[in-house]
Image (cartoon, rainbow, N blue to C red; front, side, top):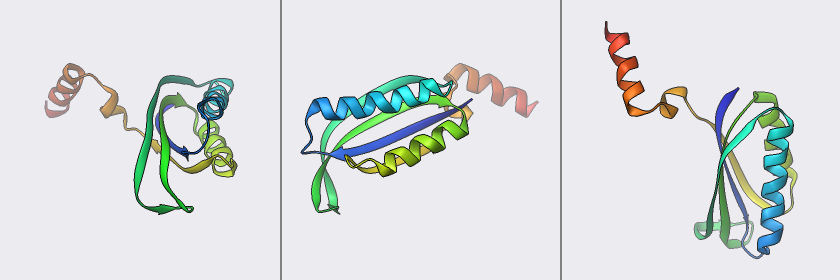
Length: 113
């Protein structure tokens, strides 16, 4: 399993229940595929720097998860087809970024030796 960060921008005019239902579907998709969601962060409504699909605001949600690549590809596809999603981005997080600082220093020392 690989670590991923998924950012989803929903239409800001949607109700909280609709957004939470869509986020629950995404987390369920990951867990059914054998992955695990470690964090769901609701950033709330933010103003865009430019107009996106005739909107100036969006509701941001960030998911951090570990899953198989096929599961994440299918999730990305389903998010791109969802009407309530304005934009989504899936980023694979490098393993080094997930390590604690002490572990990263120990790994760097081993690499230098």
